[in-house]
Image 1 (tube, rainbow, N blue to C red):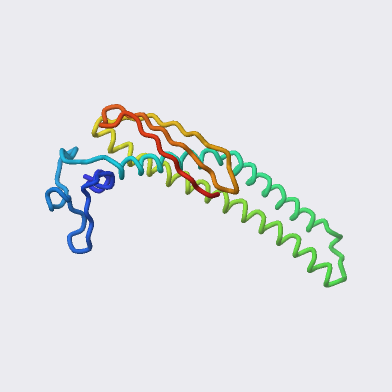
Image 2: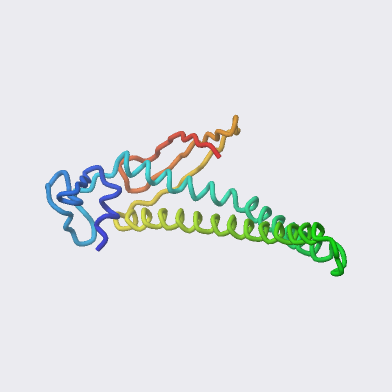
Length: 185
């Protein structure tokens, strides 16, 4: 059993180099079958849940721009390669023109590499955010807690985005929470 997934959300978690992961209430290592009867889900849980869902929402909102950047950069890269190839005929006798031709083709390959790296970065961030959300949802499912979230993205001012996160819970001590987060991107 993955105790750390439950303990990551609990307020009673203590970690130290000497003992490792222990419970503040029992001063022992976690030991339970399916759920912990002493779990305290409060601010730490709420913050992790909201941030995990917010990160996933931001990544999903950037999907369209990431893909359009990818396709635009791919097209520019292929056009540079073709332009470099057809820059002048292959009977170039000037060394400078060969350098220009090779430079243009090399630029095209750099564009191709950049586009693939940006797409791979997006995919890995999306996968990481989905995994984090899944871990939290898996633990909440064990305790019978479900939730519904709503994000209110405010106007972006000087590169800072403010988001109001509202979460409605079922089967938890709080029925609704509202927090504001600010981030730069």
